[in-house]
Image (tube, rainbow, N blue to C red; front, side, top):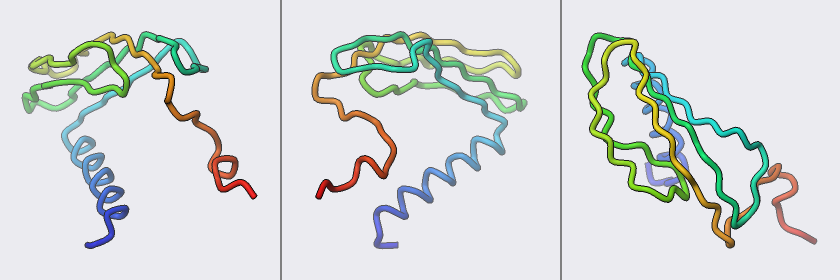
Length: 106
């Protein structure tokens, strides 16, 4: 595949299939639903393995995080590994918006 876009899309889909087959559940949430550049917010991340296969969680990567995320935690079936990280939205961060508003302006 020469098209980098589709390689990226299909690689992400394949990773989701692997995580589902391994019984991995991961989630990251915040109490804030609106943020602006130069703001900080706490992100709570959770990770659970529902299979008997031991999995090592090496790191959690969150955009704009302020602290190293190296964990090297070994999962135990059904037990949650929880991590809280502060993120700082940089001044030059792009605003998220519906795709039809982000298009070219005429």
